[in-house]
Length: 67
Image 1: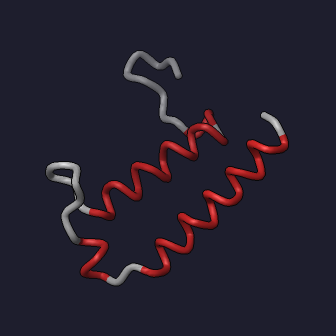
Image 2: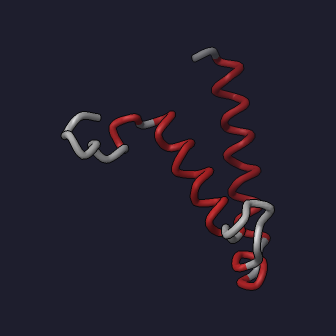
């Protein structure tokens, strides 16, 4: 990964942290544009996806035992 890409990810990380800190309980529970998903659901999905990019080993093994 390039230095520019790492720097961009750091900026995106800070945006995600700032967003999380700005939301109140009602906003976290509000429905998102994804049918059946709350804002919390979308945020957690986004964070889990980002984590797998940074730490691929964090993904659970598949049902057949492979990653």
